[in-house]
Length: 381
Image (cartoon, rainbow, N blue to C red; front, side, top):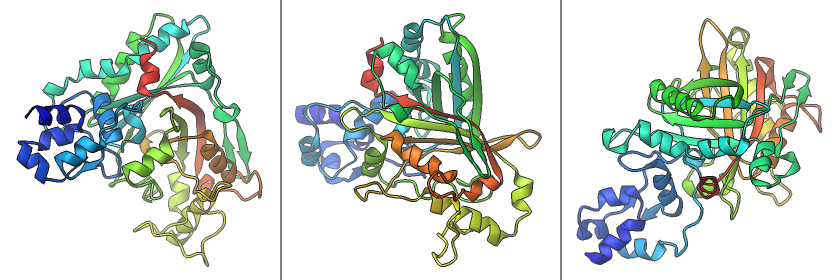
């Protein structure tokens, strides 16, 4: 029994829940539950950061012995809860621009305690057993990260303006970005409100909060499925989303305003040409008919080593019928090179071919961010 207790300390929460006894634990295969977008769907008791940290190094074990053998001697720094997980029902996005006289390090200390804010608002023991834990992550602009840590990020870690035949993708900046995933709109609102309230007085010059929500089982407001090319499986998502050895991540955020009237005025076949997939089942168009300017075609590519250029998309629709609406585009990657490749292709930097998505959707916000690991955040406390 002492051996079982020691193993369970390092095992994922889902394994702990499944292990009703040593016999049951040794004989059953327990796998971390996943969300419908192949991210980890974290439910039940416990602190979200710890859940993700445990799941990061354990995905599936078929016996007690395998669990013990697989446990690493020295745990790797865990990514923040939002990086590898999938969407839940609702998302909150908070972009903060700091004032000129803000104490940057004091701000960093506050946002580094984001998980404490979440756990105080929504204690694990007050959630239903099948209710997903609210997930939250914080990111820094490259310039702010350098100010508070002295660390310089790659030159292309900063988002730049881009202009193409169908529109522009402006760099609109920001210093702090908070990403939350929750079951309800209320939870997302409460977390972002608490973050703003916790910042030192006079720190914020301006901020913008947006809220995303699930639409027709993962579809964009255009009616097409979103994120079809997302990496599937936890191991692949680690490879795509985490900086090797550091386990931080890079993040892109963009706000896209859809002209749904214009898009819906097109026949279905033309809509599919713009997207590069069938509308009903998201099947890739045949190469003989797919335009080189379809969104799918513009996004596909490989690096100099032949590896597919990929990102972890976590976008959601936003907005209202009476006002602007569209897609809050958000994605994680292990390098800003991945974002640069895709955005350059959208505006035809090398070949003058522009992404047809921009025929009906206008980008009005854009920025890159650095998402530190939980260990890097802990250094601020």
